[in-house]
Image (cartoon, rainbow, N blue to C red):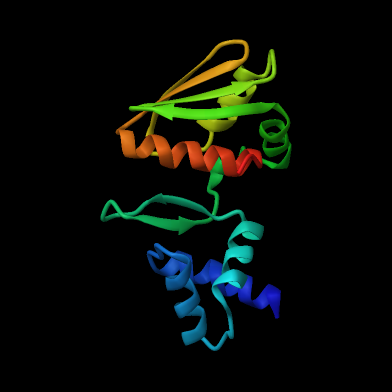
Length: 151
């Protein structure tokens, strides 16, 4: 049942631009799945779906593509194990890591190919991310927190 539902989720996000969990839940219900928002939230987490910019500048769910695939379980563990702090101000996100880990963590973030991130600069234990606008800074900081398990 769970496997079928998750396969259906992948089909839905390939066919339609789904912006919210509730919208995804509605699509699943229309296709005969009895789901709650909490179930959909767990499925999204298990499938490691990401949000990307859609054609109309709205964000939509997507499965990790070829570039995002570079951020495999090892890279997620690295972020989880090395990131100590995440903050933002204006159009800048600052990620603090354990000493010597910033370059690898920055590469993991770069491989996400997030539209909002213009670039990263990594030192020994600090990463600076330049983002398109101040609203994007909060969004990107939240995504990194989630990936690093720092929510």
